[in-house]
Structure formats: structure tokens, C-alpha cells
Image (cartoon, rainbow, N blue to C red):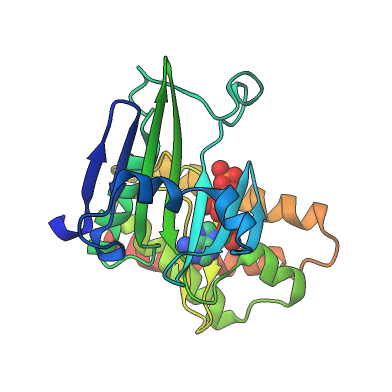
Length: 252
Ligand SMILES: Nc1ncnc2c1ncn2[C@@H]1O[C@H](COP(=O)(O)OP(=O)(O)OP(=O)(O)O)[C@@H](O)[C@H]1O
Ligand SMILES: [Mg+2]
């Protein structure tokens, strides 16, 4: 991992892991705190777009005029009601924003099409930990869910997206939430993959492969059920899977 892509400021309450390429030398804890502060972006009219998922993900103009994505981490499943955004500090995955930051750096070093990490923040209070991550916007990116609500994807786009997913698998990345809205096409029609919370580098066994592809299929089906007029068919999904397999399974 290149050193210049990771620096740390740590106090008793907060850890900031940040990418020095995005900050002045000697940046302070107060400046990083402000950099993460959604209320500050809101009051300054710097919020460009809000994506509604488990929580809210913000696309904002940072103080240097760069477009960056800010995501707070929320619990999913059974724990969501009980713990909302709190992670138990003794869990091995409590500092998940730092884990995602590190994984993004590793994946970028491997040439994978994933966002550049800018900052991970871990905030401790008693037994609990809260997390935030900031990444650089992929210029002109739109998620596949949004695209398909407006137009079908071309065969070339489906092929490129399958190629990107297959390359990810081949590199040994397990994506724990591979879904339609974590697949992006940028302004030049290049495919990207985002949202690497709880993802890991691990051998992609047939079981893990099937889990990821089934989850992806379920998400396309769910989106089609919920939004009439989604321009996506089972045939398109078959094309996507064939494209994934060309890259991933040629290894065997
Ligand atoms: N680096 C990025 N560049 C451009 N757009 C992004 C980037 N990261 C995220 N997005 C957009 O924001 C949306 C939500 O981001 P993300 O998937 O990371 O969070 P989420 O889905 O809300 O999280 P969760 O899965 O926990 O609900 C994505 O679907 C994508 O449209
Ligand atoms: Mg997502």
C-alpha cells in the first residue's frame, strides 16, 4: 500500500484515516471534523444530491470545490431497530469504515474500477462505535437502477459491466452486497463498483460466487417489481452473467 495514500489522526474519541493527497500538510483534527459535517454542507448550500439507501449518502462540493461522496454507516437486518448506527466496539468489524478504506486502496492498487477513498472516521462513545466514509465522486456516475428506469443498457454496456464484476471476483474480492445500485456507469460509459462495507479479499469459491450472483439477480428482480417500466429483462441478466463468467471462470 502506498504510504502517501494513508495518514492517521487519532484522539481518545475519534480516529481519522485520511488520504493526504486531498488535504494540506498539517491538516488538523478540527478541519477533518468539519470536512465530515453534513450539517455544515447543508447550511452552506453545498449538497448536490442525496441518495436514499439504508441511510442517506450525500454528494457534496467540498471546500476545495471537489465533488465527494459522504456515507454514514447504519446497521442492517435485525440489529437496525435496536442499534441504528452503533457498532459494538469489541466486534472485529466495528471499525468498518477503516476496513473499507483499506480495501478500496488495495483494490485501486490492483487497477480495479472502484472509488478513491478520501477519509474514514471512527467515533467512539462508551461501548459503541460510529463510522463514516468519504470517497471521491466517480465523475458523471449513475447507478444502474437509475439508468434502467430511463433507458435499457446496450449490449456493450452489459458486457463491460460483466467484465468489471468478473475482474473483481477474479481478484478475490467478495462483495457482500452486490446489487443494482452498487453498479455504476460513468459519463464515458465505463463501469464502476461501489459500496464495499463488510467486503473482503478472500478466495471466491463456487459457493461465494453463487451467493453474489443470486443476490445480484434478486436485486434486479426486486427493482423490476417495485418500479414498473424498468428496462431490463431476464435475457439481459443472462448476458451479464455470461460476461462475468468469461472473465472469472476462464481461470479454471
Ligand atoms: N464514489 C461514488 N461516485 C459516484 N456515485 C457514488 C459513489 N459512491 C456512491 N455513489 C452513489 O450513491 C449511492 C449510494 O451509495 P452507497 O451504495 O455507497 O450507499 P448505500 O447503498 O446507501 O449504503 P447501504 O447499502 O448501506 O444502504 C450509489 O448507489 C451511487 O449511486
Ligand atoms: Mg449501495
